[in-house]
Image 1: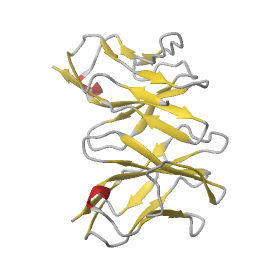
Image 2: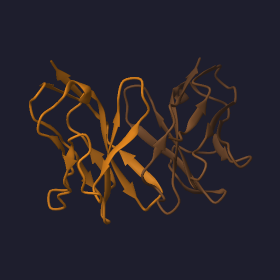
Image 3: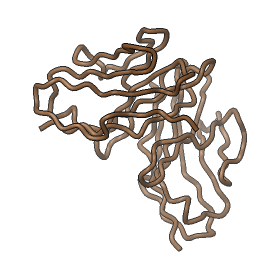
Length: 108
Length: 115
């Protein structure tokens, strides 16, 4: 079955603390994984994709095929990182499956 | 930066009525999608559209739903005989040529309330 699991609905950290948002996937093919973010009153937008292997706004995510994970990390959280984060898996090219999302709250 | 636009932002309709949700994808994009998010639940894939036909659809996308690209710019989702459980946020998305399925550029969504 194709599935994306984000176990935490809410993650609350202090400013400057490290952040890790967990994502696990289930897919028999070669996975194409993304993180999308939705800031307050803004549209859902792409944060990063695994094939780019880039850092966006200080966030990185590494695909671990052995653990079927694609966790999102940032060493020092900022207040402006507070948002809803969705892990997403593309299957067969035309369909993206989203996890339930994790709300990150960064406290001052 | 070009954006996907959706109208209306909020639609209220009575059960049994038909609604049409409208979207204008980014102009040079070739792949179009509809997703929905019921309050408190995950974003769910409904349908993808490429080359003037449906390329993939979910089990949610039954005969009650249809999509159309009536001209070169609009992409619509029609919901016939709406039910209370159709109340949700509906998102339109598009993606560029050569990148079918990803990454998605989303509109702001239409909140559909069925009473």
